[in-house]
Image 1 (cartoon, helix red, strand yellow):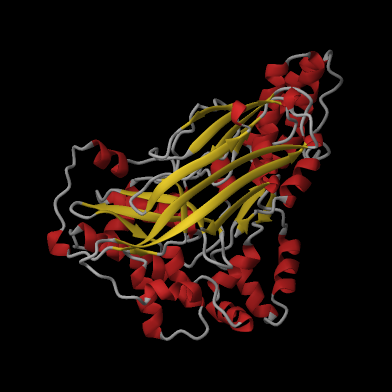
Image 2: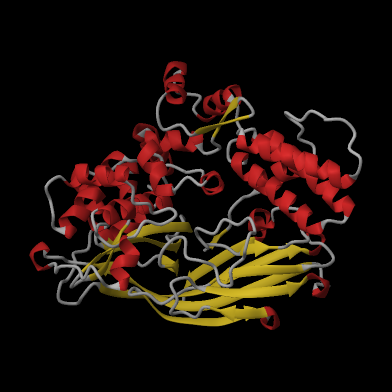
Length: 505
């Protein structure tokens, strides 16, 4: 099964970057390209600080052009990165109020105007303010579907199948066996990753730096073999399969690319197991609170954040419970029962510096990654080691990028939790209440083998360090790309040229 993410909107916005001029007023003719660039850069910084991101984008573009004309390449790159950051602040929010209302009306023509108006005026609607206007999130119409189960169940009934839920009931409804241990039925997978970029999308010279994702060894993912990474002559380093984040790092001189396409590929195989942890709360052992692993996975991070507000939320959820297994269980059911799956504006969150777990706490909006980081943050707030694990889900018909959580119990190890998979039970149009509960209960301590794991947690540093490059580094489900001679934000635009195909061996 092949998964490829559409990034056509990114291309449209980036193509428009050079002509957007909102909020820019000329300050008179500058004396030189250098002084014009300095003036534009200072104005861009001020507009960005004032949350006028469209205006800032135009001004950073002007500064870049003038620095380039003045021969100051280092400053031109700095201004170009300002363009990238400005675009990332707005790219997921293309709709003004009237356009959003129209999009909702077109998506739900059979719903009353009164109900549609209630959606947009209610909670769970993501928006930002930029240049004095409100802009709405591109995933809003789909999030409305996730937040209104009657509409979701109608959608699944029209297809005569509930996505994710139906294919996964085999695992959820099969009883576990405490004798055989937590890792069960093995499934062998073969994978291929391809980045194929048209040569005319690349400059003639410069170096393309790539961090290419690869599978790692975990408790459930074993027998990992990296068969090839090509072109092999450009591979500078690999992390190995025993790392927390699987990567091959390449540096490709663009002057060497002579064909119609730049092709980078990786092939691999691994075995994945379903997981069924059967836990006796009375047998959970105390944590070694001085161990490096405990300190690492209970600390506050960039996106899994421990704050007084997060601690207060966690304590409210668990009440007087002190057993870590039962605390984690209460957190799990709280998220599953009260926070429906939603698409989240990850690019904006990363660019703005808003932690994913805090965003869920504040808004109730979160997809698999956001929800898993929220779960981990709540656990860490109580002194329970936790992390957000992921790469891809390989469920037939629903393959794509995916994240879930794990929390650690002494005497048992890393226990999986997938609140997002669990919530698909509520999408079913024909499941009974008992079936929904059994399915949800399975994903607290159980996990299907339709998984390709790339990283053991989020926000693991890239190696080597990319420096000040504008990158979405939280997760590495696709290549991270840096090119100082490229005019566009290739870390985003190259996603349209990347595919991951993983099939049962």
